[in-house]
Image 1 (cartoon, rainbow, N blue to C red):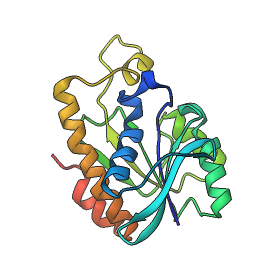
Image 2 (image 1 turned 90 degrees about the horizontal axis):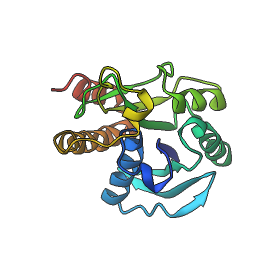
Image 3 (image 1 turned 180 degrees about the horizontal axis):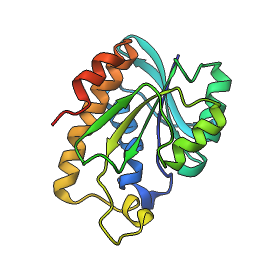
Length: 189
C-alpha cells in the first residue's frame, strides 16, 4: 500500500484556499480513480483504491495544517508503511507561481508548518512530495492572510492545470518514475 497525503484545513471556510491545495489534489485524484474519501479514521478523512496498479490510501488530515503529522503517523503505523518509500505528500508552496508544481524526493520543511509536523512525527524528512504553487504573498500582507485566501479567477485556472499535472506526477511516482516526473514537471512553463 502507498499513502498519498494532501495537506489542508478541515473547516468549510478553508475550502479551495491556497493552503488547501493538497486537499484539492486529493479530491481530484479520488474523482479520477473513483476512490471514495468518506472514511473517518487516523485523525483524517480517507479512502483506499488503486491507481495505476498500486493500492493506495488517500488521506486528508482533519487535524488542521500545523498538526498534520498526527494523522499521517497514525496511518503509517496502522498499515506499517515506510514514509521514505511508501508516502507522497502534496501541499502548497508560496515560492512557486500558480500553475507550477515541483517534485522532490526529500527535503526540509522549508518553513511549511504542516511538513514540519510530519517530519517531527515520521522521524524523517526523506519522503516524496509534490509542491503546488500558490504564489508569493503580496508585499505588506500577513502570510496567514495570504495562504488562507482564495485564488483570483485567473490564478484558479492556472491552479486547475497544476492539479492535473500533480495527478500525472503522482501516477509516475507510483510507477517508480519519480526522476521522470521531476524531469517532466520541475521548471515546466
